[in-house]
Length: 193
Image 1 (cartoon, rainbow, N blue to C red):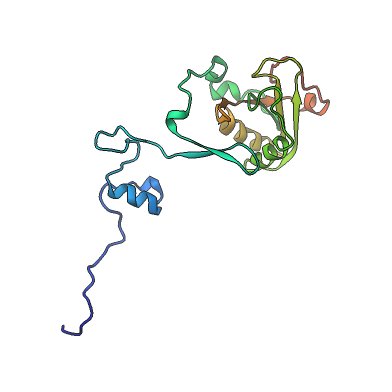
Image 2: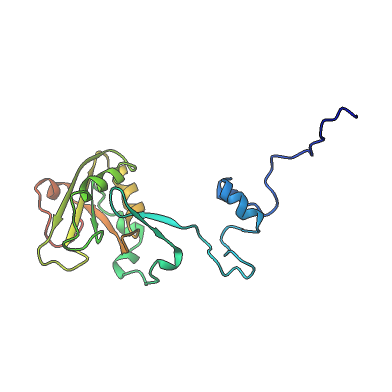
């Protein structure tokens, strides 16, 4: 056919060999796949480069910092965090307690509304209360209580938040007794019942 129109090769919509479906098909993932990236492997000829994407950790309402896998502390998880999810799920409640999110003196006016807003992804939040224990140790001094409308929302929050890094700290999440929360009995010894 001499019609003058260029002949376009037949391009299939299937991903090229080595393309990782888990990357979601974004432009960046296609470029990475083109250069040989496979999910779980490091970049570079000897796979010595990054093996996970950078992510941003929110530090304030309008700010954040970029976190790289090598910037995460390579600490053994504290003994309290090695508690299995089975033990963590004993005595479920609509109220969760978050500890070690911030240290003493680090509570600002944005912490409560931002925590409540972040927790809405697990379900409807009824109330968020921040309680500081005077002269408490660094990990226990600031307690953040979140009351959900439903227990299943609190369970989702515990599973997702316990052990998560926040501002370079490892968050400790557990259930808190609803009656104690409603009496504002917030500073006693931890027994999560």
